[in-house]
Length: 123
Image 1 (cartoon, rainbow, N blue to C red):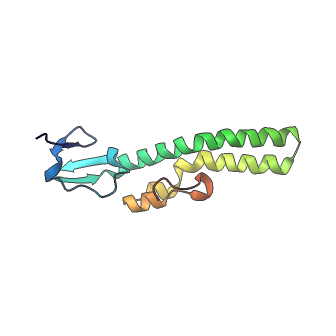
Image 2: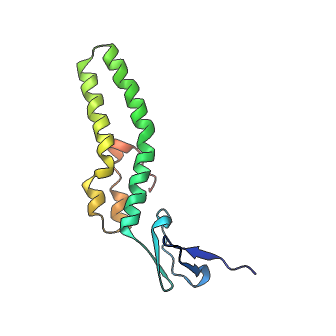
Image 3: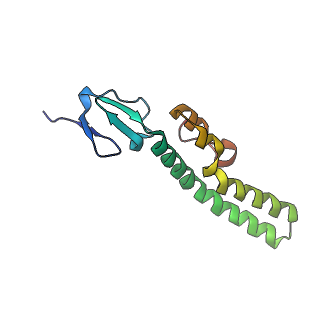
């Protein structure tokens, strides 16, 4: 019978059958092992969260570039301004203060700005 191991972010491993594992696996890359207890390293979880934002916002920025170009062609100042504002919000999303101040995984997941990024992958 093969043993299943859980490996934390630092490469430490433990027999999965003896571990206390977090119920949320979204931030598995941020797991840290202390004896047989696995917890999330919040700094590492924040990096994972910010990378997810960057992944989600890339196609949104591409789509907004099209909106801006159409507004530019139509010489629509209000549409251009709205597009610039939306693109700025997308660029600023990884630097949101709620991410930096999150001290639990639940607070970090709640920092997903659905008004800018759409539905949360952590819902």
